[in-house]
Length: 119
Length: 107
Image 1 (spheres, each protein chain N blue to C red):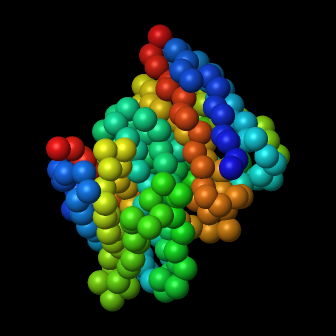
Image 2 (image 1 turned 90 degrees about the vertical axis):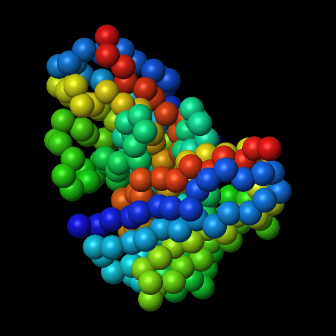
Image 3 (image 1 turned 30 degrees about the horizontal axis):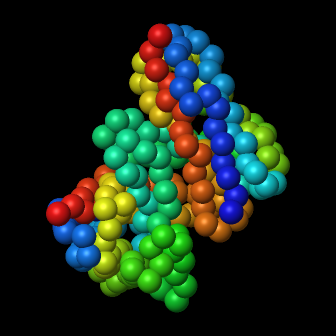
C-alpha cells in the first residue's frame, strides 16, 4: 500500500526557517517524480515544487523561488522541503504528493503538515 | 500563466441527484486535466485523470469528459460520502495549476 507521511510543520516567526519531511513507503520511491502542494487556510490548492526521480531537476512556483529548496534521499525513501525566509503568506498545510505518469497527476498524497508563520 | 476556472463555486444537491461541475482552461490543454475530491481536514484524492480515466478504486458514478479548454466532472446518484470540495488541475503546462474548487453541499 502506498503511504506518504508528512512531518516537520509548526509555528515559526517571519524570516525563519523550517524543514518539512515526507516518508514514503509501499512503492519504489526512486522511480517517481515527487511534489509539494500547499493549501492556505480556507483556500484552494497550490503546487509548490517538483523534483525528478534522481534529484537532477527541480521546479518551483514563482512565489517561493530562491527561498524554498526541494530535495530527496532515495536511500531513505524521503522527500524534503527546506523553507527559508518564511513569510506570513506561506502559512498553509503542506502536502507531499507523488507526481505520476504522462498525464502528470498527483496520484497519492500525504496527510499534510501545518506551517504557521506568525510573530 | 494559464488560468483554470471552475463553475459553480458551490452547488446544493440531494442524495441521488446528478451533479455536473465544469472547468475551463484559458488555453487549450488537450486531455491533460485531472479531478480531485477533498473532504474537510483531509488530503485531496485523485478521482479522474487525463480528462476521463477513472482512478483505480473510484466508484463508477464519477465520470469525466471534455477536451481542449472545457471539461466536466459528473457525479450520478450522489451519495452522502460525495459531499466535498472538488478541484480540477491542468498538467499540460508548467506549473501545474488547480481550479479554485467547487463545494458540493447537502440541500
